[in-house]
Image (tube, rainbow, N blue to C red):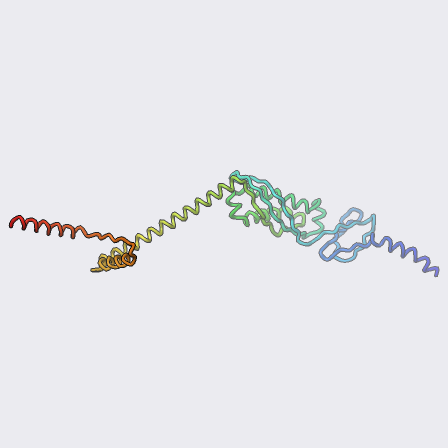
Length: 259
């Protein structure tokens, strides 16, 4: 009984101070341990004892994290003002470096991404940014990943979400697109006219080479016109026929005079 009475206060003290001594590290976390202010190792998932006053521990999330890079105003290489925002995916590869080498690595990665995005936009033209988003995003990823490597952070991907343009530039681009569509329409129409002219030339040569083909085509046209009573048919005679009629008239006139 005396032993139990002596152990009871100790057990009570342990239960009271146990939450302050025992720390849980989840599977997706790593614990960075400090003993008397010095780095003493990385703790794996599980329950770990941390002696108050003498020891402390910082837990680091090792999962892939997403940073929504806010809108950034930038001037492109061809002096056009744009507003760009992006999404950055990164993961802590070394928990010790993430705590020891940089203060608040999440904030540092975000600020670095913003600065790099503005610089990347300034080194490219507007057409390059609009047409080659993947290349611009890849350039930003390479630069940020290289800068964050000493921090134990790896940048997996960067995606440009939106590229905002001034209203006057949007109107200019709309006019340019409309002019381009009109240009294509004119070219297509001209190509159609050329093809039609070539086909008409081939048809004319075929009618010319085939005896009687032109007369048959004329009769077919007359038949098509006569199918509708509202059509008015105008007959056009060749000049040779008119001259022949004129010669016959002159001959008859001369004959009457001689009689």
